[in-house]
Length: 323
Image (cartoon, rainbow, N blue to C red; front, top):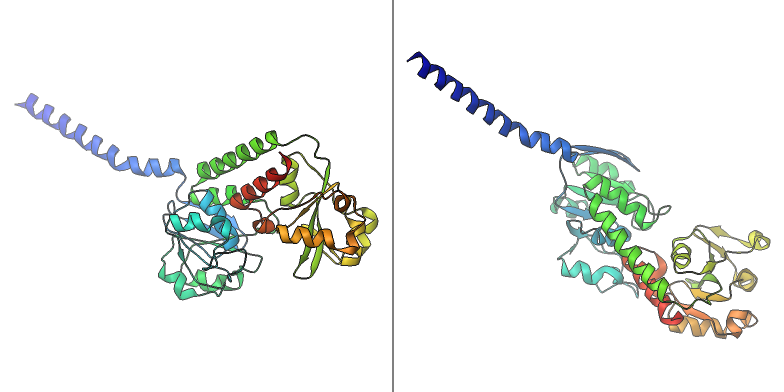
């Protein structure tokens, strides 16, 4: 009798211990996965209790990166429709992918709508601290509504850097790296297929909103061209006094444009075939070697801002002329 009781007590203890292990396992697993996690961003600090499953973007400039990462994106803000977008205001380089995945319009024309954001019940909202699609001025409203918001500055980072940063916050590290690897593999394949006598190149913003500019060697467009084997040249130091504004591009007057272009080849930012013809016909530029040799090529309408999708399109646009 005593032996039976002892055995029963041992079995009961073993069962209780096994139950305790099963209850503690999810907690240990969550800790191993890094949840909850706290990250710092452009507007402060964000703590996420678990991996997000409903992401919303208020920044169309970042939406392509989220799509490339296979993020669980349910809605994105739309910009004002133009030649660079579809009729909803989705940028054309990723509009088709967004439609295939059922991504809806958060609000149109970059007109911030807090009610729309609340209605989508995001467990992570991606926002920009710069550019026309910034909602930084509404960060206090979002915080007051308890909407977990990650603010990213895309004005001083490559799309790859932003993908890694978003991935670290949202538990999409592997997806971010996979997107970068796919991009690198594609551009490496394009580079290997191009003829070798490419020479030097200048990237020119020609008559974009009546402005004229030269791409800097550290700009995203220049880095992409460099990866394809081009030696990208910026504005000559002697012309630096003519610059009216600096970003990734040095802005100058049309009268100073000819002296600022030194590349054997000219690539037109956001350029089309029509832009190439206008550039070639411009009397101010008639003496440029690139014009005389007709080595002026369009980078395509989506090259204005480089993300995963527009970068692939830009690489393919270059390949059409140098194979």
